[in-house]
Length: 360
Image 1: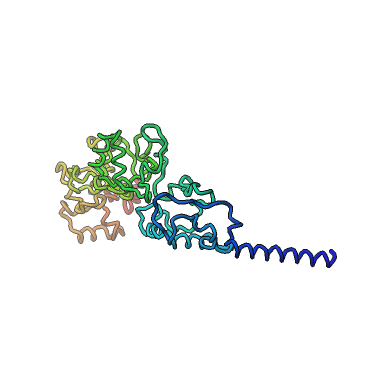
Image 2: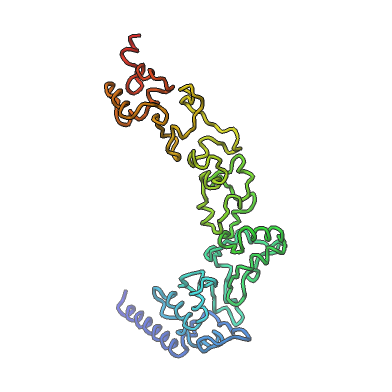
């Protein structure tokens, strides 16, 4: 490239930049504006000393900074310098802006340069799930109309008041809502997040920790979730039988807390219980459970000293010659599964056949 051409290019660039700078300083950068600003509403409280963005058409720097990295966040800070009402909402989680949390890009929802009467807010671009409530179950009203913001929110700040849920649903579900709020209270959003997961035919209890089989299939929610008032409470509901049936336990805890070891889910009747050790092995008839099972919380433990005349010291002495000591000595039924006295002699240590038994 000839040197003269290169110099001419540099001069052209310098003139262009200089002209742009001059225009920026003279017009306040308005010559670069993509369109006119909003003229404001007929009745509006001045914010930052102005009533409408249109008053700033010659002062681009009031909102915009140099186009560099992070300029959108910097612009958001400038927005909040004027919009003090929005800045206050950010500290109030009951407002829309407060639910959004860290608002660092006002332009993601609010538009400008679309003319004096242009739309300033693209509310439809907001993912409502970010506000903690999905619109999956609120796409259409009961009348079939599409939901609009004012159906649920106050127009001034998009604040949501929890009473609105009940007011709306009572219009077409009076009996249900009356019963539902009586059972669960009126803090609907403590449990409902808009995904309609708890509606009849939608929620599958099989996905929870406790399946509703047998007689549980017809149980109402309030029967088991008696003190539940939050979604977390539903998730933490008891899954053990005793959690709901403590008052139904005729054994008063004597057989422990695992009702399912003997009872099925269809009925309390017909308990499945087989005592492997014969309860009448002493020919004295059926004896009370506590005779052998001293630990009322653990019926897998037992003792034979509850009714026999032999003492621990005597039993230790008699079994020492067989090498049976400690825990083995306490587990009598291991060698005496039917309670017969000479049964241990035939089986020997650990229930194995002795030399005498093998010879015969």
